[in-house]
Amino acid sequence: MIRKSKIFFLLGVLFLGVIMLVTGCDNKKEQAKPLKIGVLPVEDSLPFYVAQEKGYFTEENVKVELVPFQSALERDSAFQTGAIDGEITDLIAAVLLKNAGVDHQIVTTTLGIKPGEGRFAILAAPGSGINKAEQLKGVEIGVSQNSIIEYVTDQLLQEQGFEPDEIKKIVVPKIPVRMEMLFKNQIKAATLPDPLATYAESKGAKVILDNSKEDISQVVLIFHTEALKSRSKEVTGTLQAYARAVKEIDANAESYRALFTEKAGVPEEIKDTYRIPHFSLPETPTQAQFDRAINWMLDKGLLKKALSYNDMVSGGFIGK
Image (cartoon, rainbow, N blue to C red; front, side):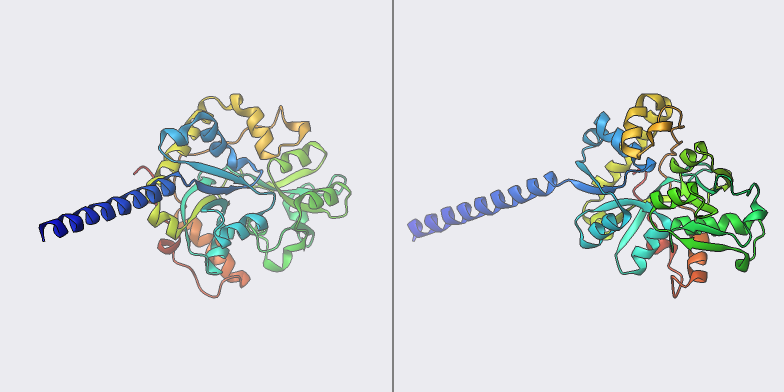
């Protein structure tokens, strides 16, 4: 009996050892799995690339993989299928994803905390004769439909006292095509984001209105809710690394001009003169910013009912 007991004891110890070994391997694999964040070749990606270049992610004990996409559609598709854990997007797109059933939350605004961050401009075509806002009444403005571009266009014009029936738009989804049509006077006006708005201005287009004096548009960082639950420390570490990168850019912006030009798609003609944008430290969108976007989407019929701020925004990962 004693001999049998020893055998069972040794078998039990061996079994426990195997379980611990397998569990340990699984944990190491989970820890080694990078947090994948989708980015576009636009200016709001710069702090993430600086954090990567400076080793801030590693120093904050988080492994981050920046996954580049050439279009918002490709990025959002990857997010919907779970191929990436998070993405940099705009507030309108984030709400549309949530409304489509993609469970996620906003953890910080990346551009648009202060006026002038993430500039959009309504520009008149060279030679169009349009020099002031009131001349845009009834003029078709090139935009992408149901987007941050259309949202900003409506907000800027409404602030000038335009009635809904005085705002006319023509849908030109691809920004390069929209800009080319503007240059050729095929459309009288268009709304463009920086740096392309600045580039268009250098080519003779005239800025009629922009959001440089008001924080109309917000670019945000979102993560799947499951990732926020299971990988909360990594998300917190990501935001801490991001904050360090923002401070570094603020102190040494010109040192990152080459990186910025490469990653933000700055046109060659303005790469040496285009102003690197200001980035603010992590901060969630305000209730007022959120409500403004939601109300526009309700008016447009993009939402059947308002989404909850607390459902969509989580500030608990900033400065934990």
